[in-house]
Length: 475
Image (cartoon, one colour):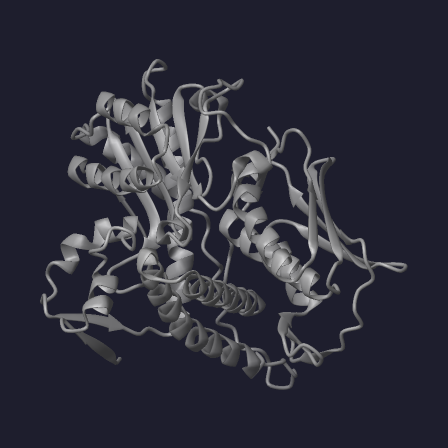
């Protein structure tokens, strides 16, 4: 297993990897700092792992994250009913019961590029029926936006949970009741609010001061750990050991799946490095011309799109092998759209396509994987956008249909006659555009893994209509 070394003389890269610059530091970096300090100061080793190991690590971390969310709610429910506090999280709220939502202030970190007023704004000072939810901004390209995290402050304990990466860049779930660690996590999040001059920063400072992190009773930590183990989603069933009779013609796994996994990993690795270095340069905006900034932002956007596309292909390949089980949890659809719609609008704008999103006054809670849902919906929207000529229009409508949520995408302009050629069992290749995309069966399989369903039909003079159904979180 090889590795490469980065010497101290490579100042920018060393600073980037060890996360000494606050803008590049993630919450995982706070957890990893102690282990990083054991590494020689002159050398940082970055190991490369097989795709299968990365997939297994991601599945394990996702299962632990889901179990931890349930464990946190269980822990909060056994405390005094008058016990309140502050919950900071991303990409959405981790609380699902009205009892807890009414007792805790909730802050949800979202990219600053998104304007909450464009959808369904929630005023920081206005009390809803159950809770106060404050939208807290993140700078564009902030690496924290790629993590799932929760920081809880109560009078009995403080707790941080992060679904990110360990010191070696392997997907990992980490949590801590340590007051010092949680205080450092808060300082890291606070720095984001400080640089954006957020109006609620002084209020949050007062709330955190009221619930200063303390060493919790061991019984609370024990209860949390037991509940986490209890609520772990079931892992994928191990493959059977019984060999089929030799006379049966059992189809073997297509070699394209392994090839896609390898290519996806090899493509995303250099693109991630390019994107991160580009974001490092963008930090020096005051030293750059407007044209240079625009070009760097264009590089960042193109890298992000390609990374997302390859990650989606990797997920589809894993699901086709039936090696990946997606953990489904209740999630506010409002938060999914807060994260997704700005990305959709930006990609539609770059192709001169109008995107019209029609949402109901109140969005329900669905049972799904929020990160994967954002990824799959963005992939569908990108394919839909690419199939329209310049000046076309896409309308997105959302409504409930029985025990499911119905999301419909339809065009208001004739689709271009793009000729796509099938590439194996997962991909389609656009001969006129040179682009790759997942075929319909692979896309349907992704939605099935998310607990939903995709129906595609042809509409005269308008092309395809995508109808997506997702299960509601019903009592």
